[in-house]
Image (cartoon, rainbow, N blue to C red; front, side, top):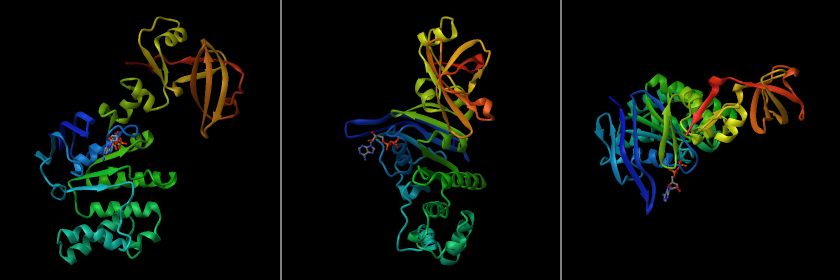
Length: 329
Ligand code: ADP
């Protein structure tokens, strides 16, 4: 049985619907990500689950119980926001203990639990600091500790890494995932960053315009996008319409075809003539704009040696692995 089950969830702001029929199931201990472009309804869905935003209709079952009529405080759900929302006049320790004080947990238990959770997020040494004395990444770990200390049944993370710089982000996403696994805590994470979703999640719910358009693990979403939107959002697919695809493959193609940039091989004697239009060096990858049979393609090549670097205007050949062609709606 699912631990979280969202059924026919509907939410509008005034006359504008955000979503009209959201359905999803999440297993206990699973880490799922709501991924999608800004405005597609990710935060609204998360806030409906937390109880911060009222729903118009539908059910949200948590461990078998419909929580829609339950107040946010009684749902036992933890939530972390992009803006850490710490109390500036309280120390790390006091910030983390706050939720326990509200629950009237006695001070001995509270102290013990705060210490445990500070250890978990590696902030024990900073317990006496104030938020303004800490970096963004450290503040976000306090926010995480503050929601974990109440031992929530479900953890909701709304773009918690988006305000942090790239290096801290990468470190913190690993730390969050490790803690989540250690605690076996069912977690719903919201992001618009595909890489973050791919590396962190057991499962991804890809959203667009108020709908979950595809769900699956990272590999499924990456290798088998269901439609042009999914192909465009995950990976840097080349999306060809039927005419372009027929021209390139020299056979009749009826639908659209998506080809991943790394599944095209550039070589000196392949089946197709290719012309390098331009290239950019992305570190370990060189991204080429190639023209072949009048069709423009993006091709990613691993930057292993000088041989992989081709000048603009150079004539080459390319081959496409047929298994990497993906028909999309
Ligand atoms: P996302 O998290 O995917 O960026 P949101 O859930 O924040 O998307 O927003 C979904 C849609 O609902 C957007 O069109 C947004 O403008 C609208 N919306 C969100 N919150 C409110 C609100 N409080 N009042 C009116 N419209 C809102």
